[in-house]
Amino acid sequence: MDKIMNINGMTCGHCQARVENALNAIDGVEAKVDLKKKIAKVKMDREIPDEVLKAAVEEAGYEVVSISEKKGLFSRRGND
Image 1 (tube, rainbow, N blue to C red):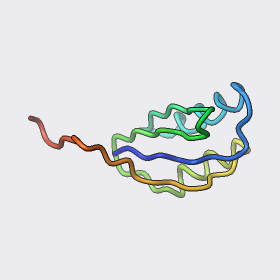
Image 2 (image 1 turned 120 degrees about the vertical axis):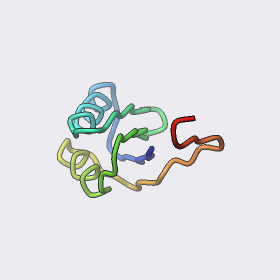
Image 3 (image 1 turned 90 degrees about the vertical axis):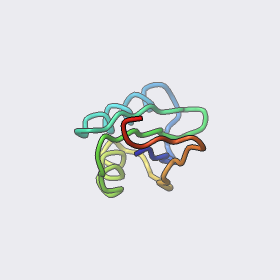
Image 4 (image 1 turned 60 degrees about the horizontal axis):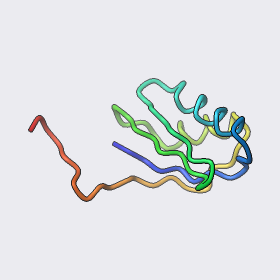
């Protein structure tokens, strides 16, 4: 499952690293922050509540504006 988080308050590479580190510290999460777009792309290997993701970012000092599920055109499920 993938999610996109819109985040306010990030202004530099240090901010980007703080948010990535906060999200990646959550077990089962792999996050990559796009500073220019002010978003975090979050890949999860299991269901993690939005509140947990939001709390990690806010604890790092940034504001989560929204969290949405990323839906791909050609997403695949199963072992094919």
